[in-house]
Length: 178
Image 1: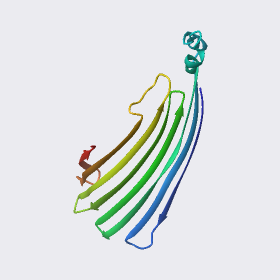
Image 2 (image 1 turned 180 degrees about the vertical axis):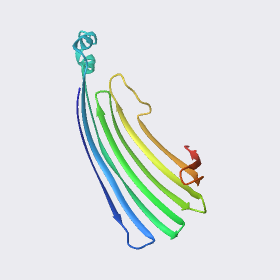
Image 3 (image 1 turned 180 degrees about the horizontal axis):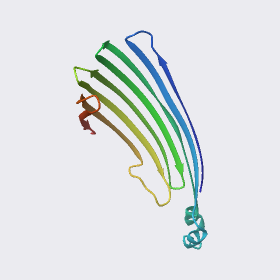
Image 4 (image 1 turned 45 degrees about the vertical axis):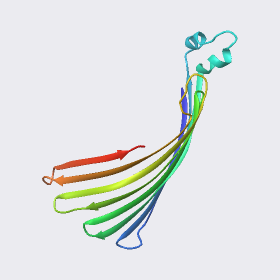
């Protein structure tokens, strides 16, 4: 087996005043893999007259590459209250002997944070759109080949300080995937 993996990322913060922070973060990756099957196994998988089709199992190759980014704006309302807006996008492409997949995801969220007394409350909502286009090959099949989905989420979280050393985290959410 052999593989090569390259990754890069960045983060930029801009704080124009005491109430606002703008953050841009992103990353990219490129992965190449090769898996070898022992020769005795690869000989068992060869069928006369169809070696090209079944020979794919003798050595498989795959690549994955993609990247994404997130833009976050935090607006401090006062010492104990914060609004957070976030938008993100991501693209991933996978190519292998079995299938090719080209997918993208886009999302946005809003979150409110407050700290009354011993509590740290977070409530928010998000919406995500996801799209995938698959090209099936040989024996592996994903149906349908072209899929799109979107889902929404509402959530709440309360972190309660029980003592200086211990806290209790309560959280819950509702998701909708039509």
